[in-house]
Length: 199
Image (cartoon, rainbow, N blue to C red; front, side):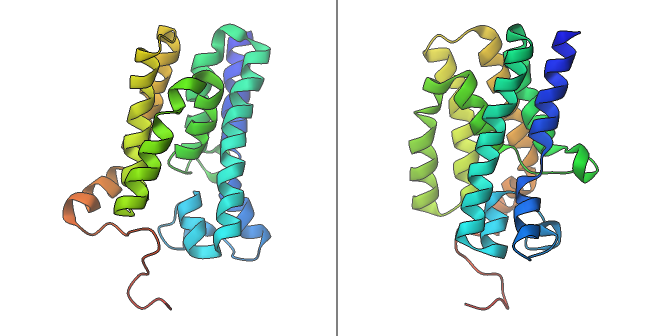
């Protein structure tokens, strides 16, 4: 019973649509009708600017960490599946009719609670790839895959490593359209405007 409650709490906290709320709060409207239609920080950046994007990023990271922390308070043995539940909540939010983000920032927050040392190598990977190639999606994908590898190398419990693997798989699946665009050479770079947008 306590495990189910912990998972439910982690899911609901993870499901809070931070980007959607930030965009509404500053008058942008429904972020799902802007740009890529995603509620994450990258689309908020394009639609609403840096401050809103940073607020979304910070909110999603805090949300992921808090979701796992609250779940662990209810049932410490469920901490690993709570990390997965938080990301599932972000990607398939009950508040947005089971639609949502791509799980990157929320996953980062969950990882910071579950496997903090394994996150360290993923951060420079994201920075180097994103800043070099200016593809946020590529940086996010490679960073997400780094965390399970870091978990294995650092000797984290199997349950924690398995949870990071599941989250990484979710992130990859949620980026399937980005992956297709990367292969096609049509993925938008960071800071790049769509044709017809103001400079």
